[in-house]
Image (cartoon, rainbow, N blue to C red; front, side):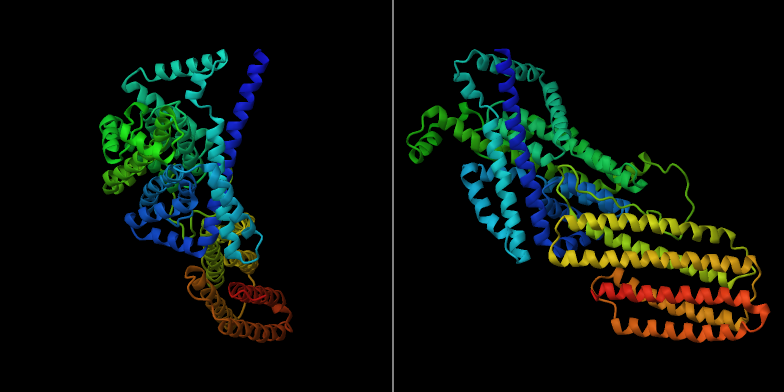
Length: 606
């Protein structure tokens, strides 16, 4: 008998996990499909972050509605702060918006839950599946959204069926079922018998539930299902929802490990904001619950269902008995009340605390202090800072990662330019001690390699996310640009070595030659200006004709200067100096070729 009970328990648990798995997978598929449909528009939404905290708030709401996970949004915010795309203050507004945006999931479940989930889920999948096999990208992406939407609600339906109904178990004549119900009910009654302390206990349970599934949206869905099936009442479910608001901050905190100080501060701000909200809600918990009941009509306890509601229901479903009618009405009202509670809580929390965003920023700056005092550095301090986000149960955020990578490619371009300008500085000042600068420039070559690796890895992950057509083409372009920039970094590294060797071995070049190098280097910098302008401002493409003219001037200059060097080599005393000079010309010409390739890549020219 004991073995049978164990296998029954195991089977029931696997059914619950299976329903939860379908729900989470559907959420991922729907989220990624929406992102592909949104495409470039989603990255334009991200651009509004740079305005102010109120624009950031709206951005957080919109992006979280698209991603369907506040955890995914806040993880991306931490990454953006780490890459210096967002300031700490801007990130706080986005985090606040993410908390509000994640309440959409509860409303979807509550609204659609009025209908039979199993009846609508499979037809939606049936409509979306054929669209996936069509060749038109927009239609294909729309099909993916529909399939994900259907899977989400099919998973909810299966989860609802897998979680046993307390009322049906109470009517069961099986002693094992009756014993199970008595034990669970006694546990819930005991946990709910500590008055105000019970609220804290169920908040902790909400935290643990969110940590377990790593998604506040999924935790909210589970809470609604358990409440509908009679295991917990509305008050307990509301306390669990508060705990889920705390639990969702852990994902962002984990993402900030190993990131720079501002990313750590953004994660800490997220935790403090949600904790502060839960603290004031604990104090006003029961009055707030009464307000929710007043705003949202409808009974959430079977005893509260009126005869008028029962009569209205029986007119539609005449074969239903009174007990089933009461349960059906409560099943519809409970998700709506929970969704309203979740939304009003986050909305009130934002209204109360958004004015204190600057104070919150200063608080986390005092809490998270730099370990060491860093000197001012002309090179950006967050190199190799990107991390691909999209593992686990979080929806993949390919479009958002693409926006992050664009900034890092721009950063790589800035570093290679700094290396080239450093070479010019060393070359033009042979009488000054440039040892510190030379060591810094030589070390930056490793930094370029690390940054190139991280960018390339993230771009490859973005391609596995099946981005929208234009975005996929953009990824191909960025991969080529990154490779060319890495080659420019290698050229600059060799140029610095040549300049260092020239002065270490006291190789003298004529003043005329030095002037020629200066003119040549200015042409290279003009080329860098051309592609860097586009990397910073995506609204215009670099002019192909202008790029080809600059590259042609560079080729002609190298040929002319090389001829002059060959003539001077006829004198034995000049040979070694002129060989270094020729090597410098060759490296600079190679940079010109790489720069032309970058312009071609940005214009999608093969």
